[in-house]
Figure (spheres, helix red, strand yellow):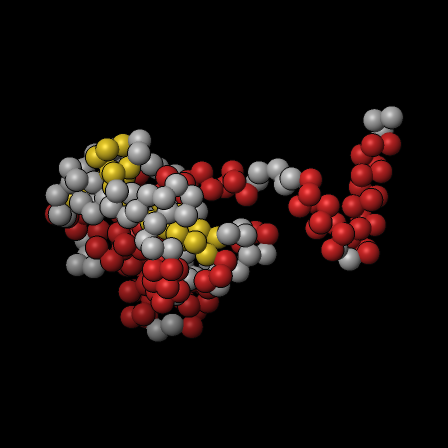
Length: 207
Ligand SMILES: [Zn+2]
């Protein structure tokens, strides 16, 4: 990312440079301000003052959507008024959805009936562990991106914020023996030999 920015700085004209720096600067200020005020409700006036630009709301949206900060609004919590913002968790959640188009997102949510595919919660339901929060739906990968899963609609499903936070553990769940053996049978000969070598190595020392 830093490479892209410095290239832009080199190639862009001065005005463009300044705009880019301003927007980076105000976003960094907002990020710092949110992180310094975990658990405190921040008003639009305060955020506008911190960012010093009229487009501050767009920068807040970028912190949410591109950086994964769970900045809560009145849409998430019944006790927040419109124009109030609250960050409780300093750790941004992994950003799964940035490269998924609006159309794909809408298609998957509609296909899944706007319902979490793990626990059945619907968007807007009360949060199971915090009644003042509402359930928000995210898109999760069926096969994780790190394991070669695509951003295609067929590999996506609706997950609520609660299940999505725990989803990393699910992909680490132990595969059962039947699935594992079936996969090894279907693997290439080279991969089968690699598995065989690995197992032989592992169990030769245990004997
Ligand atoms: Zn759920």
